[in-house]
Length: 427
Image 1 (cartoon, rainbow, N blue to C red):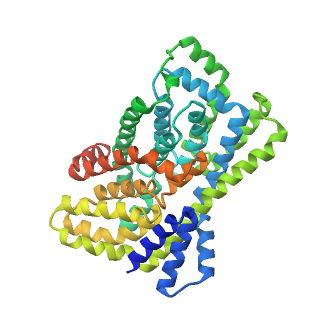
Image 2 (image 1 turned 90 degrees about the vertical axis):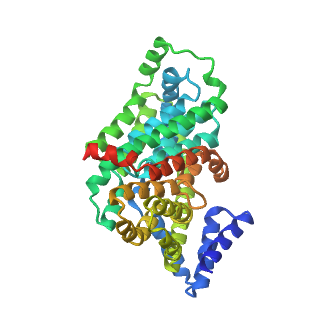
Image 3 (image 1 turned 120 degrees about the vertical axis):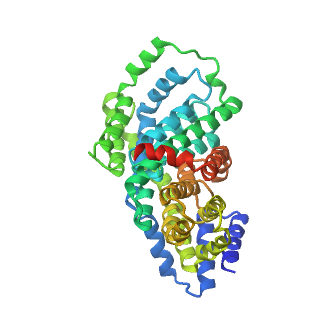
């Protein structure tokens, strides 16, 4: 009955044309009324707690950095360098996005922060380059979810503590699957670009002189990712602090180096960044309200009982658990799903003789994929807000990449050696 009320209220509100953030609130109120503990103070408290998250502080600063880069000339110069380097390849900026996602994943381990950074920088480039926005936004969202898999991974830390599993081994085991996720996106983008790529890329040829000129003109723009990546890699600052560095750097270069950014334009740029940030933050907050109420209603525990008949086969049990996590991941955010399902599933994993490290990698990967599935889909919401593209259109744009990651996930279920053999190389 509880599951029926949750699904009916959420889908019903969305069917009436209600924005997803408000549909999530309606769903939360319906669950509270069903449970007999309706309290507006609880709703308000959870809304505030939903955005009271340190990594999320990176979102508004990376958005501001994106606004400043666009107005200050940095983005235009990055476009020129990217086009000079891979402009002759159909969909070249998509490959740049994938490589950037892998690099950022090896620095912060936060899918939301990484996605905000990638989208703030790359979405304007792709829009200017004539790329299909829903598909481009979908690619960046799919690239952002690599962050919880490649170390350092916040998700592995949380799972390791909850499951009492070696976090070091989880980190090492996540390297190969994370790289495979990047390869899956690369192949999928190649197929999409081959069919849908912008004609802008078709008539260009690689020229060393053009590349050299673009590099000389854009050297200040190139310094920014070096500063961010180097600073986070060597522990100079956190990803959130890196977002502030990016915003300040973009401001200084735009004002005093390229001189394309003017003082009178700053209030409008800050207001635009604030508006976009408020949309993203409100979506995250309302999603976590529903996540809290689902926990109170004990919905995950009810669904988990369905897995017990599959204990005799490791592959079948893993398959059913992954299906369960995919379903729950559409309604719960990343961290609540990890914290709720880990203590429930781990006893069955150990009883069935499944390697906890192997399960942990697939479990975190599956939860990361859940960040792309509406209606909660935090990463999807972040990209939609940054790109200013309707969430429904971004959801349609992400589906080829979502399908590729799901296929890879279930290949890992069928062939555990794909995960464990490379993992033992790193042990």
